[in-house]
Image (tube, rainbow, N blue to C red; front, side, top):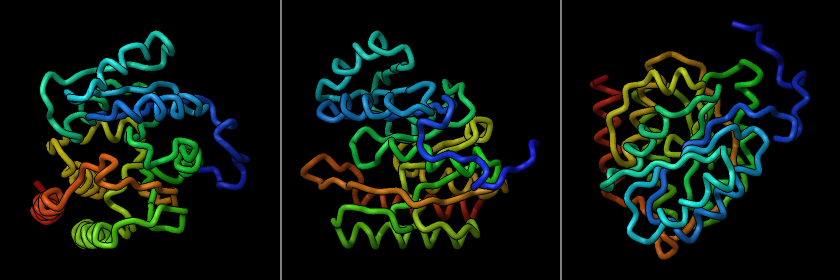
Length: 248
C-alpha cells in the first residue's frame, strides 16, 4: 500500500486538479424532468471517468430522455431494468459495471451537487480513507425542510452507529464513495432504501477506513417528487437489526 500523503501536500483546490478516476453510478426512476440537468452536471466534473445510469423501469418517459446520452458523450452507459426493482437493486447493477478506482453514488433529483466530488475524493486520494460519506448534517449549507424527516434520519443514524460502532452523522446520505474493490466485494441484498443501513453495516464489518465530510443539500419536497417515506424508515430499522445486530 502506498504511503499516505497528508491532505495539505496534495494541493487539490478544485476538481479541475483531479485526474479522471471516478465511476458515477446513478439509479434513476421517474426523473425525466431533472435527469438531463444532473447528467450534464456530472459530466462537467473532471474526476468523472464514466457515468453508469441504471433506469429502473420508469413510467414517465425517463428512458426515452436517456437514450441519446451515450452518443453525446462516450463516458455515459445506460442500462434498464425490465421491471421496477428499487434503488438498491439499481445500485447493485451499476456497481458491477464500474471500472474506475473509485465509485460514487449520485441521485438524479438535483438534491446533491456533483461539484463536491473532489471534496469527497480528497481523503481517498490522500490514502487516508477507503470509504467516504458526505454528511448533510456536518456543517454544509442545506435547504430547510421537514423537521420530522430530519429527526428520523438522525434517529436511524444513531441506531446504525450503535450496531456498527461508527460515529457517522448521516448514514442515510446519498453521497457515499468507495474504493472500487471494496464496494464490488460486498454482497448486497436490499432492493430499496434498505441499501443504506445494509452497506453501512457491511462496510463497518469489513474494518475499512471510513471518513465523513460535509456536503451541501438542496432537498426537495414530496410535491417535487421526493420518494422515500415512513415505510422506508421502518425497513431501515429492520435492516439495522438484521445486518448490524444479527450480522447476516
